Length: 137
Image 1 (cartoon, helix red, strand yellow):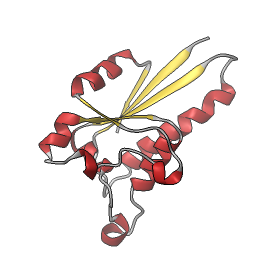
Image 2 (cartoon, rainbow, N blue to C red):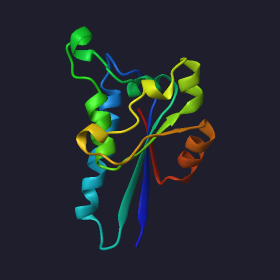
Image 3 (cartoon, rainbow, N blue to C red):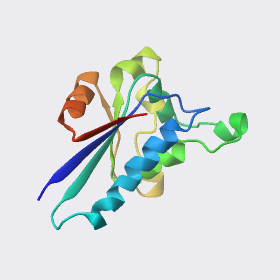
């Protein structure tokens, strides 16, 4: 019985690139590979937002209005709905002058119970050191 730990590190801005959306899509999809694993094996994904990537976590995004594309807000909520571990770098949130209530921290409105975690970068660094596969977006 082995658990493969995956980390998806999102540091890209939310608009004018598909990197953030791809990271969330890969993280969500990583849970479906369990059907291909040996009995008792697991996948444990974590999504971490650092640097400019914390802007992906803003509530009330208006990507459709400004860019003609859907926002990452629902994608973020889907991640939490599926119980993905989501970590947001506190130092970067502070650097942008954001407060926790500006961020998508839960998906309660769609039935999710998992909450995102606002953590110091040192915790994200620890995650990056412990995972089997690390991907930057």
